[in-house]
Image (cartoon, rainbow, N blue to C red; front, side):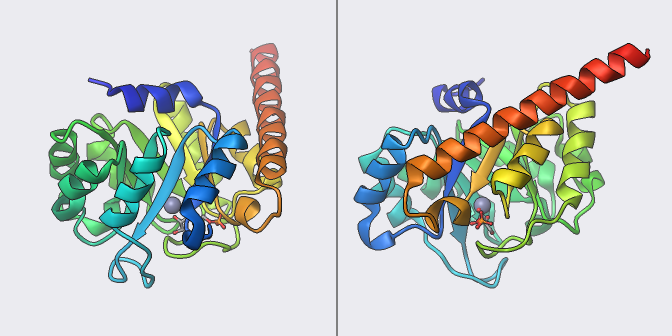
Length: 242
Ligand code: DX5
Ligand code: ZN
């Protein structure tokens, strides 16, 4: 059963998702207003526990504060060691989609089930070094796969192209599945990811290190279109060779 927020995320495709990690946490209301005016349709919240990843960001109070000031769907990226323990508090705080890391849990299928019971969209994430096969058992159950193009934990890292191969395989095997990429996404890498079938593009420094968020997001959307055109041209070439 798709929630209204999960459907809104699906309807936003293809979409740039600003990642709230490098934003100005001293002015969250202002940041929300600027991102909304810039056309952001979904927000990506980077929750880090200092244990699963060597960085500490924020938890339910920030999610709840954001919820109070925006109606945009909140795509919560749980970079934490015990996603089940914090799933309900995160949903109660206002999360619409919970994405956990396959590397963090013993039983991904059981984890998906417990998160699904909370009535939210459920995504599963994997780091660059983690093979796609680790997702196999959970694939029939998840609403989304988040393919990391950096090692989870920090913004501003260099893009790892292994994510493109994973996205290409996932799109081939799961034509309808929501695919999201996260890490090192800019106007160049976003086009490459779109060309292999990615739907959602998490962006941190390529937005928050720019003066004008609207201009940054507009440039990213133009690059997404270039990737869409590339994918279409590739499909055409493939059909002509048949
Ligand atoms: C990293 C986070 C990403 C990161 C993206 O662990 O999951 O969302 O903030 O930042 P950039 O776009 O700068 O790589
Ligand atoms: Zn993230």
